Amino acid sequence: MDGERTVLRKFEHIEHCLKRNVQAHVSNGFEDVHLIHMSLPEIDKEEIDLSVEFLGRKFDYPIMITGMTGGTRKGEIAWKINRTLAQAAQELNIPFGVGSQRAMIEKPETWESYYVRDVAPDVFLVGNLGAPQFGKNARKRYGVKEVLYAIEKIEADAIAIHMNPLQESVQPEGDTTFAGVLEALAEIKSSIDYPVIAKETGAGVSREVAVKLEAIGIDAIDISGLGGTSWSGVEYYRAKDEIGKRLALRFWDWGIKTAISLAEVRYWTNLPIIASGGIRDGITMAKALAMGATLVGIALPVLKPAAKGDVKGIKKIILGYAEELRNAMFLVGAKSVVELRKVPLVITGFTREWLEQRINLSGFLSSRF
Image (cartoon, rainbow, N blue to C red; front, top):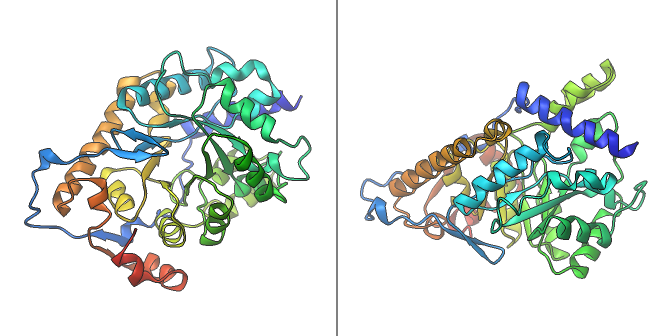
């Protein structure tokens, strides 16, 4: 019964993301981050290198397709979406993450909706499980066994543990058993030989959480900040009654803006960062990378072509972002992502006001690494 509900929820999530406006009503904060135009960039645009290294692999572009879905049966929508996204990521040589694999643990026959190795044999593939299932009070608590199953069944290269307390707190059937998750993550990290990525889902990661994650050995953080898809917004459309709708609506724009979360995590830790949350163009990508992200993550912009099986459409979107990123790098005189992290930045507005209370902003601006 639990498995059937999980599969149904996956269908509903996909449907609402495809058909409704589930964006946050507020920005991700990057409008307050300004790159400095260089009239004499002293480089040739053709020599710009967009490649990056992340968790021991080299990628052609600093872009990751982050986890969205899974859990339907072979031939159904999530199966189609994951295979299409994985094939595009394979051809572009960028990393790709599947959505929550809870469904395949509860209903093992759905595992094929996450399996993409037949169409993407070389892609850097990231599995995905939810943090509340590792809470000490979880009804069916996960441990190392479930993590290894999630990784090895789909032949993944790493596992993301998604932290989604906002979504769970407003979801009709949400799991809010987060007590003990940090201890469980520490045990997982010490027990497996795969990289572990801690991933938010649209509400951002604070410095306090980032420091704790680094202390237990987490390999990277996907900050997934406020300003992109709102999962409280998605749950608003799934609410069963007016109380549930009101709750989800109130928290639609809850969280830490992506630009702010990025600065906090970069300043307080040395972890690789995936900056996701409303990243919709190459200039914003350039800003995120300049602030210290290793990769930028996208999801919703490529969902519609993925649902149509349109590999070329996905590649067109990502290559468009890449060309915008390359042009921005040319205009600030950065030949590589490493050099981009050293260009001057100006931070203004609400983002500056927040960061002045949370980090040494002048120190951050003078040295992002």
